[in-house]
Image (cartoon, rainbow, N blue to C red; front, side, top):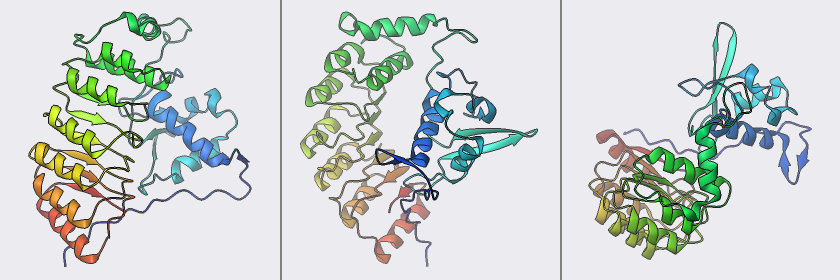
Length: 315
């Protein structure tokens, strides 16, 4: 019989006996969140040296004030045991000449250290970005060819909860191919700006925008953004099979990645039909949905995985 794809179960590391709680958050959970921030985003901002593969020396990491309440042993244990909702390891470690370095296993997007090395003198780029963020209504960067710079400004505004439609209006332009609006407050007006100003957009994340996203809006997006190859709709839980059909109809031949996890409204046939109409698909995540993982369905998924290089994450 064909190998049935692994059904990835959401798993969390067990809390140690005696762990304290604050506002319902255990010590382990707090440490995990702090390590996630540092090893995905904030290491350079905290002045740490990060290797080309995302590793940070453990001794350096332990000097960050954010971890001053945690011991080296606690940090190492969290690195070794912490699992994501997919059941995969969040962190990795390596030892070179007895020196331990650690990293996040995925999701690296380090913020540049805002200061010159060994000082508290702000970098010129940081000063410029801060000035732009503080006076965003005075700028129009839609013709800026540096997508990385635009992405960094959007990321900074998003973290500061200041990413407004006015800001998007002045930042987005035809050079933008990747846009991450996950966890940002997005309105229908935001989507209209994206559709109007980013005709060459290829990758779009609307993660956690379930308060807004409807089948009708998805249909408009895929119609107005014909070059999309990657779409993240995590927890957009009002969407139904109509969205899947629209994505497959408009983007099927070119679609490479789709995240529709934590959306309960799909059937087994919806998933199979989508896979059939997206022959280039490399990644599909529908974990946390209410798809019925029958033996017959899993065998069909296995057969698809054997004939195509596609990674399917389910639960």
